[in-house]
Amino acid sequence: MLAIAQDHRAQNDELDRGATSVAAGAERFCALTRELRPVAEMIRFVVGPAGDAVPDLKRKLPGRGIWITATRDAIADAVKRNVFARGFKRDMKVSRDLAGRLEDLLAKSALDALAIAGKAGNVVTGFAKVEAALGQDGVLALIHASDAAEDGKRKLNTALRRNISVRQREIAQIEAFNGVDLDLALNRLNVVHAAVLAGPASETFLARVARLTRYRSGKSPDSMSAVAPAEGAREINAPDANAPELNAPANGAQGNLTE
Image (cartoon, rainbow, N blue to C red; front, side, top):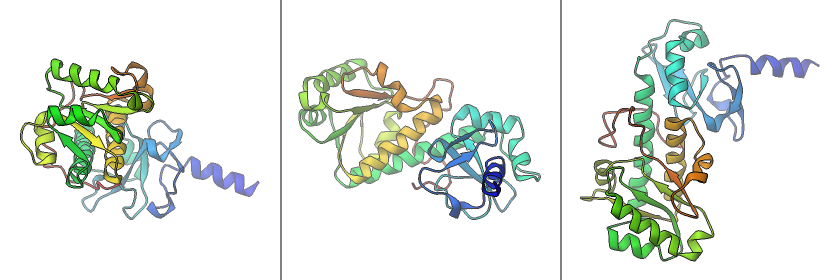
């Protein structure tokens, strides 16, 4: 009975016991919705040196923290409802644009992983090279710049459908970044389309894009697969038209970025 009571109190305590208590598959109490959710669907915050709310994307920063559902709407609502001051039980400095700044950090995190995958030789660019890559095994994702021409996207989507082996497994289609983002991440000019090949850095990139997608849309990327434009593919969409445009991977953002 004592153990049950202690567990109940832990679930209803908005402050965690510190980053060292975070384990794979764990759940945490959302300070906004007051519901238990998997940590993979949440963002941890700690108090910074200036008394501000600092996102802890690695879940490793020292000190006790609070957890909030990892969607843009949830973070914006938490700011509006003064959830950070309530959760930390102290006055807090919280930017009104915390939701937008956090989106920048998540986008930069994904683009950093794409850059590492590119340096490892796991990213193919150029229309002809991408089309050829789609006819082979080992492709994990097809990237279109969010400002790419529809004709080019349609041709490559058709090439993706032609590959029988690709149709037997799920290939992500990503339109989350514009051409400038992709140019800077891959250190190349005029990146419009790219194929992401298998590799550890590529898996990290896909995980971070999925996190960014969930943050922007409020939906799991898996729940979007039913409306994917190509068989065997799931689409990871471009930013919402009402969200701030991300013109560069860095965008002056700083934060705790690594997985």
